[in-house]
Length: 265
Image 1: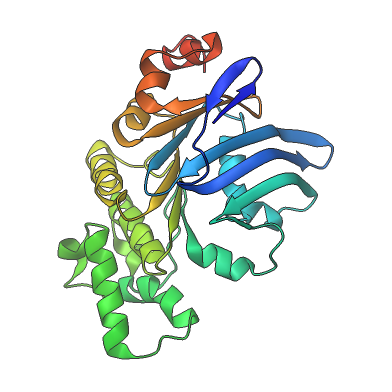
Image 2 (image 1 turned 120 degrees about the vertical axis):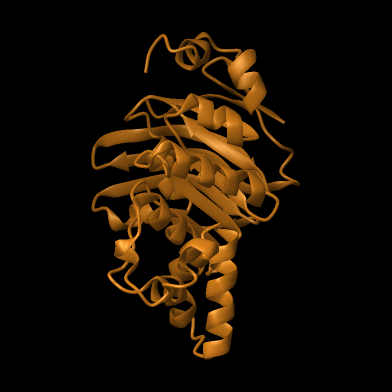
């Protein structure tokens, strides 16, 4: 299926493989409109990158997918977002939604507690108390986040004593521990050194067969390396959405070409 936005055709799935379907999404902060008629499908078990200049609406859009914008006073949202064909704004079970849709933020936001307790926090809140089960969840989550070998001998020490890159991977492990279907990542490597960035990118590439991943990034090379599809946002609108190699090599909209080639942004 194709949708036309501002004269550009936006390729979308038929909906059969879409994990997330967004239709005619508008978002307002008070009187200021931040998103305009956003419509796109995000396929299951793929990596979708959201690119565009600062302030273009990509992080705002990302936060609509787990209703994080609900926490901001004065926000009004119209349109439809379905995850697994269920409209997330017609359900009152936000806790269930945020269990299903995990999030990793721009900066590591670990709790002031041990590495173990950070990863075990979510499962404990879900009612899991069995120590053996918690041990298994923590180990599996840290292994999946590619940091187990670095922290296995210091699980009871403060997570805040880790490096920035290590903290971010523990944040990923904490998200994984909730057994989500979708993981949202808001510029997860912008505060990291190149080696830590590479480790996070390797995790994204490795784990896309298990999760639907949506990542906001300012790094064009990163989007090209890790994503299957890319959406280009500008002034709150989706200008173009297609296979990543098409967006970077044969964009249909001149504004997309100007952005990915560095002429602005």
